[in-house]
Figure 1 (cartoon, helix red, strand yellow):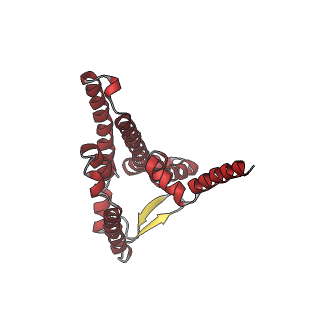
Figure 2: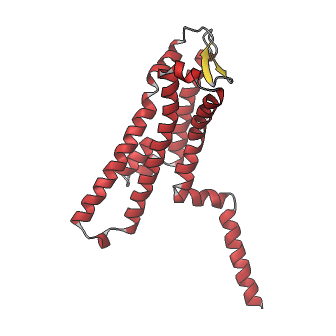
Figure 3: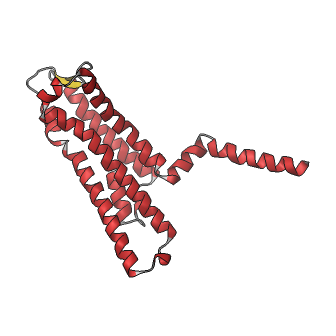
Length: 212
């Protein structure tokens, strides 16, 4: 998602060709395959990972040891969302500065409404991504760097922390690609029949008035 946003920002003309439906399917399939392989290898080993529903924590079956892949994930995968948060924050600042420079060089009337709308949409999307990833990683960092403090919290607080992290990831795509992306929203509503029903009702009402 972050790579897509950066490509749109840096090369709005070429980005659509890089992210066609077919290419997106290939990208997502490769990503899912890689993640699945990384999950299945530890799962079928003696150091598989269990999820403790009472503590909302993952526990290694060979604790205190861990599978090499699990250890690598715990040590380095944290940089993926952290980097995404940093990039999205820089995108927001870059677009703000770029808009100020454009306003200084030309009058506000010469700025295209489409360009302004695209920039506003990009800023909103980058903001949502940064906030959601921050919520997700804040809970993870609390559990990772302060395990004693986290385990000392009431069970309700621990469960709420886990559920908030889960909610942040599950709802991120909905807010970015549906709520904040007008074109995708129109396509989805049209696909489920929302827009079609509205058009049909308008046409029917118009025809009825003509008959009377």
